Length: 178
Image 1: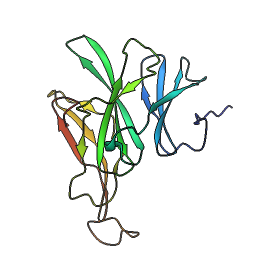
Image 2: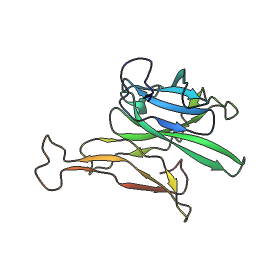
Image 3: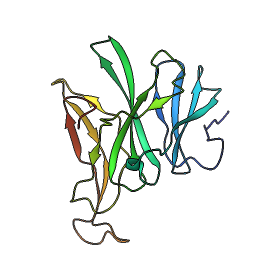
Image 4: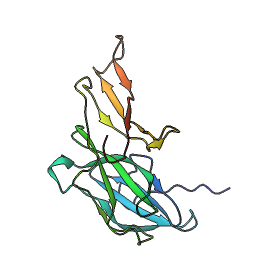
């Protein structure tokens, strides 16, 4: 019996990886709560570390790249599938996006943050965390949906009604405009 667990090259794995499929499989791993590491595999057994996929390089990345997810979106104009990374940031104020610089690169080595960068701002009712966006999904009605983990009136105790966490559903006609 063999147990296997994918681990980052350095330190711990603070989040579940966000897979980007098809082959080769690309996984994004949170690295020291500041960047998204990137690994690839053709067989899900052997993994190769790639250059860092996302690093804080804009003011909106306030404090670093936190948890995220990947969504595959069909582009009707180019008739291609485009992976979109949705990620939270360390300051807990927004959810942002990134797309591959070159769709022709099967390893998806280089990612860019578009100017429109699918920004979802933390609502005023959220007083705790605002992170961990799920993979977005498109309903039969054509509307995209996404959950984001939020903290409401968080303290060290959950002894009062109304305290704790929730995950509101965000809706959009396009993955780039929530």
